Length: 121
Image 1: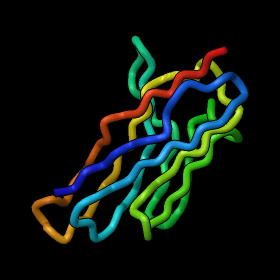
Image 2: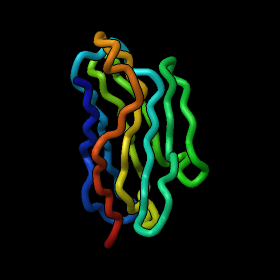
Image 3: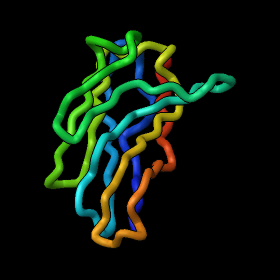
Image 4: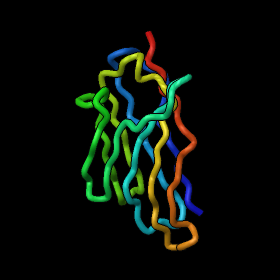
């Protein structure tokens, strides 16, 4: 069974930093592309950053230069380093990953449960 779990959210003041982690567990052969999404109250979920299996990255315009996505395949973990945080970054952050499992029945697209990020003074 494959699972994704986010961690690292919390309350931070404007201008502060947080690092989110997305850890995959279970019978994992490889993690393919991974995306970090966020959803603020009353808004649609949006893709914030993505990283391919080869390490290519992309970002939505509002976070370029402030957020960095990275991956550690040895740890089956993807990170989102968030700097210079703004109140408008407040949202629940989710990771989404395509996973290839040693158990072919478990291959597929997975979501974590989300982690709350609140930017407020």
